[in-house]
Amino acid sequence: MWKKIKPYVISIAIALAVGGLSALLTKNNMEVYDTINRPKLAPPMWLFPVVWSILFILMGISSALVWINRDENREDAFSALRVYGLQLVVNFFWTIIFFNMQAYLFAFIWLILLWVLIIIMIVQFRKISPLAAYLQIPYLLWVTFAGYLTLMIYLLNR
Image (cartoon, rainbow, N blue to C red; front, side):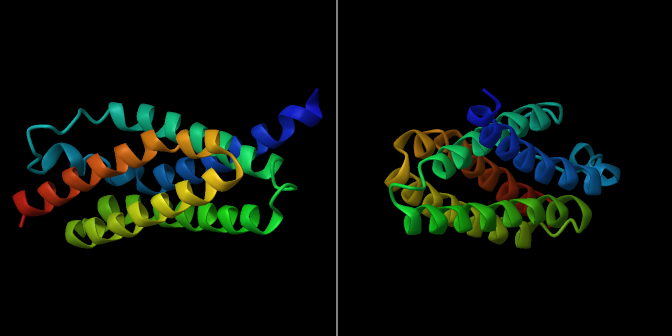
C-alpha cells in the first residue's frame, strides 16, 4: 500500500513545502494587499492560501502521475519534471517579488514567465499522463487571473 501512495505523498509534500516556505518568507508583508489599491475583481486575502493549497496539491498529484508513468517515456518524463521543477522555483519567487519587494511590474513580467512555463509543463505532462495535464488547468486559470490582478495592481498603484 505504502509503495503505491508514496510518490503522491512525497510529491504533494514537495509542492506544499515550496508554497509554505514562500508564504513563510512573505508573511510579514502580506498586509500590503489590504493597503494597496486593488481592482474590483480582487478576492479577499483569506482566499489565496485556500486556492494555493489546492493548486499545490494538484501539482503534487500531477508530478506523481508523471513520475509513476516515467517508464513508458523516460526522457519525456524527465524533461517534463525538469519544467515542473523550474516552474515551482519561478512560482516561489513571485510571492517574494510581489509582497516583499512590492515590485508590481516586475511581478507581472515574472508571472508571464510562470504562465509560459505552466503551458509548457501541461503540454509535456500530457505526453506522459493526460490526467496530469488536465489537473494543471485550474493552476493555469488561476495564474491567468493572478496576472490580471498583478497588472491592475501595478496600474492602480503607480
